[in-house]
Image 1 (tube, rainbow, N blue to C red):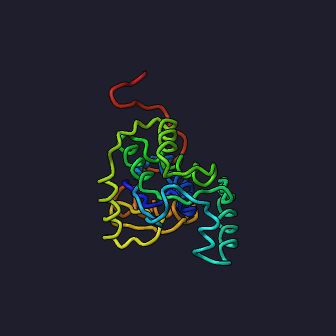
Image 2: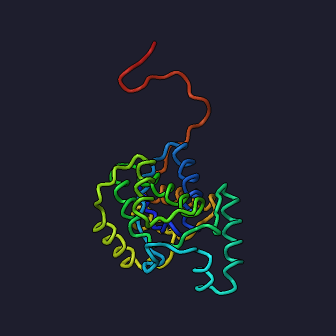
Length: 222
């Protein structure tokens, strides 16, 4: 099963949804299913500064007096998933280069790991995810060799998101045609995965009872 996750590394609900979906995906894999996840870019604020600025004042400018309550709500939701969000030191910054790095990492089979590291860098460590030096250090930490490529692919995927009518994230696109939006509860993701598997004929075999003696392909121990 192929799943594309449209998200932005500065979106807290994307971080929370990513974690919840990952748990649901592991439950499907434990039943014998396979899921191939690809991270896709979305920019919540394309005009954010590359040099960064404190996040809280930026939120207050946009949302006014309700900003504090919004932060408390999302911090609490994240904590319930075992995530630490430190808005007091988060840096509001452009995310295009972060998405480009995820694209490079995806080519190396490390897209999910790179996205997770960027989420943590932004929300927990207060790092500027637009800073080339920071991105270089994070790439090395994950084991990604940054070729400097990927910008055109990111632009194409951003355009694709617009053409699909995606206006909010996270959005989980199954097999290119079944969409689940928002940071759904883990059980909702489990149900969605199972439904797509049934619709597309990818439902894994459910073992009944304890396996008995048998032979594997190409070999049989008597």
